[in-house]
Image (tube, rainbow, N blue to C red; front, side, top):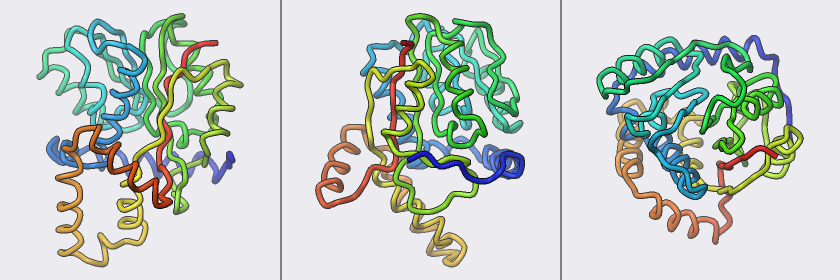
Length: 260
């Protein structure tokens, strides 16, 4: 199942406004947020599964957000990032300087084109980005174009969504998304379906408990986020196996793609 939703212009403006405010939050907020950390750990797990190092790489993250994934790479890497959020770019530039990265660049973008030469990157990461763009096939084709012949792309998307997210232009299931990638001359090297705990996050925010329960909602969010953000990846896998056994569905597909 691949569904195209509302027009791009309105959704893009909503995304720009929302994420520009979102990435003004302090670093600790992202460090102790389940959603941010499970995505970071999933990306790193997939890179390890593909035998890729976090050292000596030229890496691009599309939609790098808080920088949780991008700044997991060693300082001897050349890191590049694309974002629609000016605040995300400002914080990334400051963080790259503070952490001592010698080579880095962060750019503002509003479409699916990647402003880089062919076969430029060892690694490209796009975590929960493809569902937000109008032309998802073009973005995947651009990822393939910018990858070196032996490069890999790590792409994460939402699946089994329980609510209609107004910030998403597409909805996927695993089969349809992988078929789309294959049509763009990318093939799956490894994959994972996970993030089952996001069912609780999704219900909490889409049912607006954070607004309806001003004090208790904030307490519940903290009690959920702080401990789940610091769990090792293998603990997520144990918890998720138990949830799958009683019928819960994964909320995220993560793939390592290589060029055909």
